[in-house]
Each structure stands twice: as C-alpha cells, then as structure tokens.
Image (tube, rainbow, N blue to C red; front, side, top):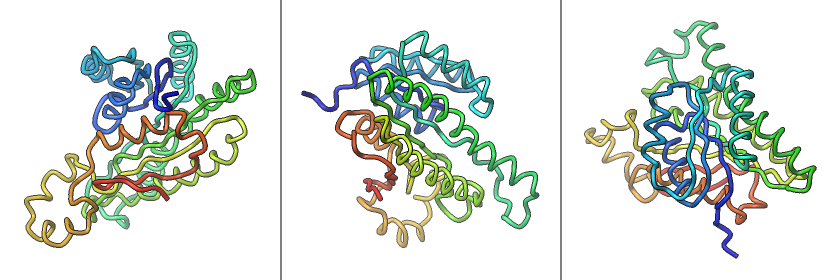
Length: 259
C-alpha cells in the first residue's frame, strides 16, 4: 500500500493563488489530490489553476473572503457539491500589513483589525472543514487534515510585524488544542511555519554582506526555504503516513524540523 497516494483526496487551500499557498496546491495536485483554491481575487485564482493544468489532480477555484463566515460556508458547500468530500484544509493566516511602523506607533484599532483578520481567516476555514470532517467520521469515514500555514511572519527585525508574530503564536495554540479535541474523529491538526523563506521580503538580504557573513551560517542547509519545501510537508500531512502526527509545528528554514 502506498501511504502517500492522494488519489481521490480533496484539499481546500485558502489563499492558494500565490506564493507558499500555490506551492502547496501544486504539490498536492501533482500527487493526485483534487484541489479547491479559495481566494479573494478571481483573476489570481484563474491564473493559479492554469499553472496546474495537466497535473494528476483536478483543480478548481472559488472566490471567497475567509474573514466572512457566510462566504466560507458558501465556498465549502460549493466544494462539497463539486467533489463530494473535503479531506484537508490548508488555511493561510490573513495579512501582514503595518509597514515598518514600530509597535508603539500603532493604534489600538490597527492592532485589533490586523490581529482579527489573521485569526478569523483560519478560524472560519477550520471550523467549516472540521464540521464536515467530524460528520463524515461519525458516518464511518474518519479522515481529516487541518493545517495552518502562516507565510507572512516577521522573519527579520525590520519587518516590524509584531502583530503577526502574536497571531502566529495564537494560531499555533489553536492547532494544538484542535489536535486534542479532534483526534477521536481521526482528524489531525498541524502547523507549517516559515523560518527563512525565499520571498519578496527576503529578496534583498543576500546583497547585504553583514547578513551573509553573520546570519547565513546559522541557517540549516545554508539556504532559504522554497515553496516546494512547504509542498513536501503538505503531501506528507495529507497522506496516511501522518495519521498519528498531530499538534506538531513544522518549521521550514532551508530544511525542516518539527516540535
């Protein structure tokens, strides 16, 4: 039996029309998983689906605002109508925002808005997916994967994303609690978080001699993580091989580990 065979499985990926989310979608579809991408931008959704033409799994897209419960529930219903089931939910954590303003310069309204946006997107997507997965488990089909992917974390000091670091910690706590609550239904909950990831935020770092001299030697494997690293872990977590692997956080930093 091939533990990594994802043929017939269905994964929802919120914010999967670019960056790390797209890398996860491509990796899953390449292994035969059917993928439903939920994103706010219809054009980006369409482009993401086009980039996966010819892969083994079927790919569809839905316009969805994950901060709106009604929009999430509508997207879930449409996905279930199309595929009959959802086996995995990969929920990206909202927005970064805030620019380079320091923590003490931000208003309470800015803090509340950013924090709520990041958390609400994961909460609504996970709740809709978990409801379906537990109902299916009670009908005799226990299989479900909830995975939080936070791709806009503060990865170096000048990013000034304290609110995102706080959100990431809160989401990590949610994942660990869900891992306990949902285990009896055959549903696992894990998180994939970035360490040093190649992105627009890190594009200029390699031109900084001090960074190269002082920081790069401390990065495992001496390279930035790639979107494909996220994809590899996503395939593992969606497979039967990870049936008992729950409440762990995978940190990618040019290799990966779990704690």
